[in-house]
Length: 326
Image (cartoon, rainbow, N blue to C red; front, side, top):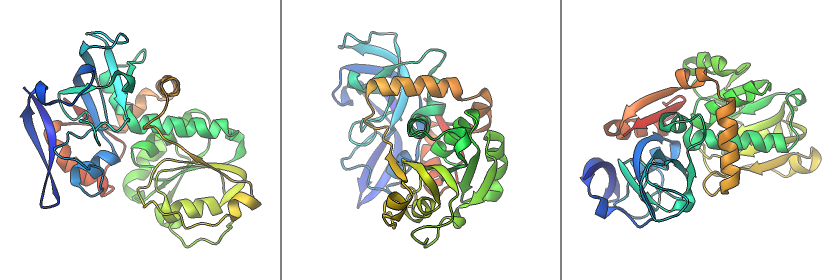
């Protein structure tokens, strides 16, 4: 028996409770993992609170990522004692996830623990950090260099945004961070490397098809009007890496930025990202993130605290990353 956060649904309301469950209750998979750490992502917050229709089948153990030690493996790639990381692949959505002391998963979904990393550091990075690294790589591959101009990061105080700000600053980009809580988050964002902070309200506009050119690149976690305004303000030949919809999935824009300024829209997905691309992103993010990020932008909670923090993350009241120690 072991502890797990179990989601159930009663009268269309999601209930989240820590319960004891048995290994025999775990879903099918060829690798059993002793989970050391997980983390709380925005998608986890939507699942735990029931605000977003993330979970379709109940009961469900949420947690879209985890790190731990292999206990049993029927796959030759892993053996008992190996340390592993999992992010994405629908785990915590349609397959029981990482907010539990045990997880049984498909070996294809795992990656070996990167060098110079442990479970705690891996989950301080987690899905959010991996996604941020993929966004930065997308801008680099699009030819957006530090001398091209300012890079806008929206939702900058969240998990993806805070890592993106840090990575870009480490690479020499001038970062403009947009946040809905300027007074609370400006100090941290400056410490992480942002050169300028702007309120989200500056981007929540009914923008004209084209606005004054401001951004060489954008990393967007918000969507909707914020992204539409950012696109209208992009420089000629700029690129926007988009990975989130915290502000909604709509995109009220026009074709004008794309056909008159050659703007490129780069969709970034970390859920089904191929193995080799994941490994490269893990290596880069671990190389670039300074020790100060882990000290300044990460907090640690227990499994029992997840429902409370899930409420806070969907309300935009969490800054940086939340590590869950199992």
